[in-house]
Image 1 (cartoon, rainbow, N blue to C red):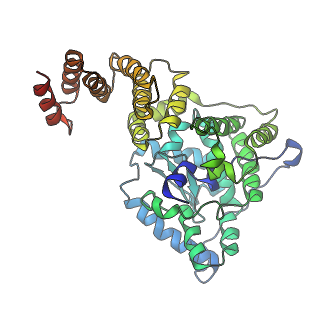
Image 2 (cartoon, helix red, strand yellow; image 1 turned 90 degrees about the vertical axis):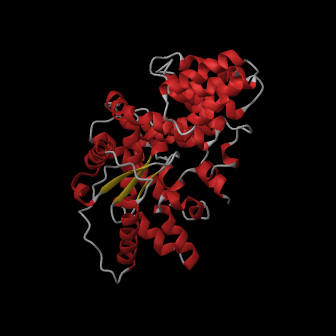
Image 3 (cartoon, rainbow, N blue to C red; image 1 turned 60 degrees about the vertical axis):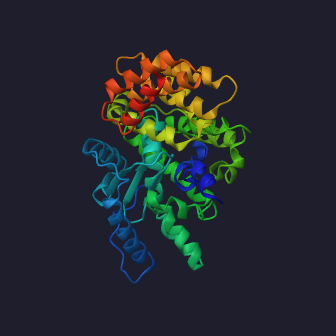
Length: 382
């Protein structure tokens, strides 16, 4: 499996949202806090390696060092984990893919692509609760004991690796993900944890549906061809139906305002990363969904306009120009929207509107890395 296809997959071991019927979900009781295992045991060795990996993560340039965001994620995780809270550490990671993972030593990673895609606190909690379920049931240890070869062991450890190791993680594929029984158990626990803190567990099904819609936007409209997340698990319609059944009759707060306020200072940067991901079919679907409750948002329009430019289907340039014009006309437009409008006009041979847009770009971003090149372009357009 190549790197490109793994990145489209995201992370099957953390994003799987299968479920059982409500009748099959008796109340579950969390275990007592775990003691650090002896280094001479399988689990002790795994903890030691994860401790070293966590030390790398703390120094990683991919780590998002935003104290308010870290405090928010940690608080939500602690509310879900209850008495296990003192043993958990949460790290926000800059990577534009849907992913969260939790290592057996209590290290949790939450990737920026996940944060961009969840609509509210309940959806985020459903993913984090699922990961906590794996941790509390010690699924990683069970999976480790199933791995026999040294190569497979190294790939197993990659489940919890840093963003910088994405290329190496591509070899992991689906065979080393948690079993379906593990996934079902983690979902069952996650739903109970989300319900227990007053959030709406029904939002978990929406996380799944949104991911599916995004992947279905690819040209062949078949997520199973490029996504192990969908290819190696039960049919998507069935899985969403069982998750709906698992949460039937549930209620709770969605936490939309709380999550939107926390994400707002970071979202422009996350959208820039989404553009660089260069998956335009998926990005167009994602931005169209996000624009539903926020029509006219300049950052979302800019991102979708850039995705239209990347996709380059018949009519996409016109769609791109419409979105980018709308974005650049907003008082809080991202400077890059002006640059994108200028580039489109210049390509079409429309010198005057291109010059105007380039000037607006330089007015807003005079110290941009490409400012000298844009000034040279303006000279040429004269």
